[in-house]
Length: 571
Image 1 (cartoon, rainbow, N blue to C red):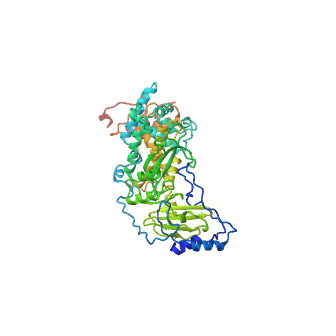
Image 2 (image 1 turned 30 degrees about the horizontal axis):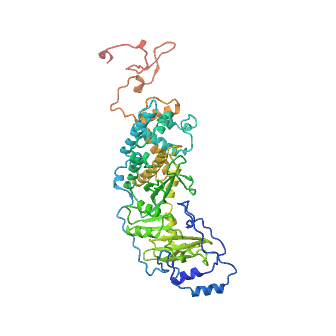
Image 3 (image 1 turned 45 degrees about the vertical axis):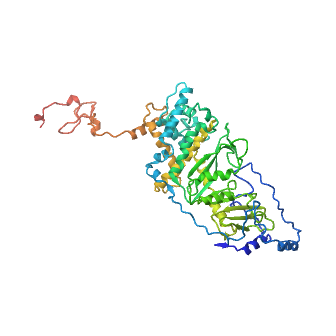
């Protein structure tokens, strides 16, 4: 059940004294808007309001409230006028999407198996670029370098994916190839020294770049990155809810645009802006953050990022945290037929004072204010904590019935805020990341992880009955994908590995991939015709064993007791 508050009820809730006798648990409430998860350098200004004193005269407080102007407190510092009721607010109508959520037709007609779904994100053009740059670097640095081809490079991809399936991103590479503790599939695919050669020589762009490209911080992987990010929105249409947030790729080596984010598990790494579908966590658009452009800090960075990351979308709702949300961003998104729901910092100049102050408010109370097309709400999950949200989708003061009386805006925000966070979780579970001192390779490992997950989303959408009853479908998908990528390299291998288990696996895969004989050949040996070997019927003492039998009685007969006759005599 939902309750809709009128102006008088909202004012009574604001003026109601604190009657709560028990502090509520705020574990499932949205994060406090006074702190920023996205910007660790942000420091909230000290609050101007102070907690009410227990010795304060209640009569003086009531007199002050009675003499206060009812219209004051609803104008922001920048002059933005708000209203305590939604009488001036227009009704919200969801704009038409124009696109069917899910895989595009371009992707559906090209998906036949697991490998073809993964190949949508690493096309032949991209593979040729990696092969060309890797061979150039290998011939220049390695003494006895053997050129990499497409089959061997895909086998390298497959081994990385299988290492992620076995949860060995922090394990030594030698352990993966070990006879006892390792897996036979690694030795069966390629020797350990060859894997190290490819890993050390892997490159994604020209080794000697023109002078105009030296200032490009992303130059070592720029061409591959742009081709890869171009494929993401081409293959999938997000649903009605999307999330814009940042992803941190763990990396502690030298990099000009490495970021420090203490709230993230890795703390140091490469920050990537991501737009993800809420329902599937499909990474629809990615853009890497290259740091400050010059000495001055960028003004309005959150607004710029959301506008760029949602370009091309229509009829969707964007959910973001307080680093991105602002009133001007909400208005510009509405012009693009996109609605916004997000937490907002309480020091924003467009917020009215009645929404920011918490003095005299009861715990679990909500205060709403409205403009013509925007709703803002202030919710107190506990004493001293004020959560403010902004929405252009909700146009009423609706609160969900329950012990915590949360507004509908918070319910929708909690439902949609984890699109990118869930992507981080699933990508990190079976990650292909290996230890490296080169940031382009760390970024490349993340590209493989995101591509494998996006391929899983597309493949299961095209074939929803694939392993439908299994609860660990993604692990099965990655394992089958890794085996499919390495199978071609195993089939063409000439020298068997020394480990018996790996050698047996190579023979098995090569035998399964061998084409069947077009015509059955006549048996070269009597044993292949189904006749068993037996002892000669006429030998005395130690009888000889033979496959030959008599044409009349069928008894086994050795050469010494065989008689040659013509057809007429035999008949």
